[in-house]
Amino acid sequence: MAEIAHDLFPLLRVYKDGRVERLLGEGRVPVPAESDPETGVQIKDVEINPESNLAARLYLPKDVNPVQKLPLFVYFHGGGFVIESASSPSYHKHISMVAAEAKVVVISVNYRLAPEYPLPIAYEDSWAALKWIIGSQDKWIKDHADFNRVYFGGDSAGGNIAHNMAIRVGSEKIDGIKLVGIFLACPFFWGKDPIDSEAESPASKFVEKLWLFVNPNSSGLDDPLINPEKDPKLCSLGCEKVFVYVAERDPLRSRGFYYKEALEKSGWQGKVEIVEIKDEGHVFHLFAPAAEKAMAILKQLASFLNQSED
Image 1 (cartoon, rainbow, N blue to C red):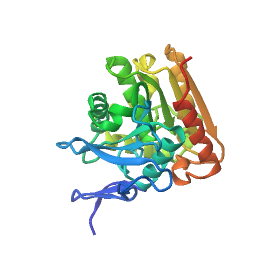
Image 2 (cartoon, one colour; image 1 turned 90 degrees about the vertical axis):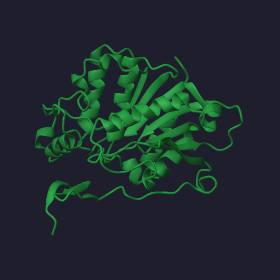
Image 3 (tube, one colour; image 1 turned 135 degrees about the vertical axis):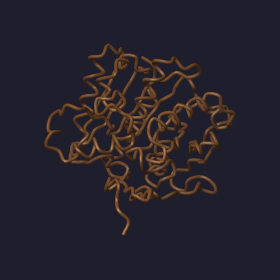
Image 4 (cartoon, rainbow, N blue to C red; image 1 turned 180 degrees about the vertical axis):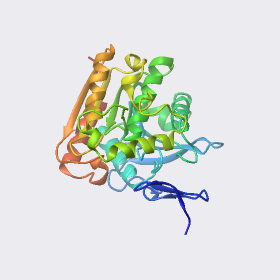
């Protein structure tokens, strides 16, 4: 029997012979031949960089007229930086529902995963995808994406990426888009010093183990990439509005509230809203997308993506 070098159950195991065994997130949904049968959303895959295998899945709502401009929602999937993809069943279904409910153009980024591609590659892939979007000649993007109404979003590790992409937009002043807001679902943040009940949580050691596994050159849990409160650039978050959802039974719950406090104390001039879902666990909406509470979150997200300027 092969010896295990890294055991990150329930996500993956790495064996001493180099084999990587992903325990979750390996399923793939092919692009529908026509539109999505449940939502009527049109879906296609696009290649961004063939050399690095960087790609994305695009979603266009039904009944869009030829010149109609819609908000653009750039989405980063979760999975601890090690599992899942833009074509995973849960993400395919969730993003189809978002596109239909909010009537927005969605680009779901298929960044590369650790350990084969350790951080910061996921961040660099995500940034490269944003640069590609701005200059894209894709007809759906050119004809229907309103670059003055751009939003980033993601769950768990994807929420972490969305935040860090917004930091980079704010610090590098990327031309060609106006980032209005970001949506973070159960974002993957942590820190060296425990808050609330983290010290007693079994998740604490797992989070540290996972973070150092995916980012072996990191300084640790106070790395600004995972602990925004330690980021001197936090005040320059490059959007006006932030919507965070946390789940009561999620070990990451307290970090969502802490993120809100850190943003408000940093000098950032925007508005942050946080919603807690009672009696639910980490990213529950992906596992039961039609449940009442998941639908409530979907409607709040749709409202967030369509708010007018104030």
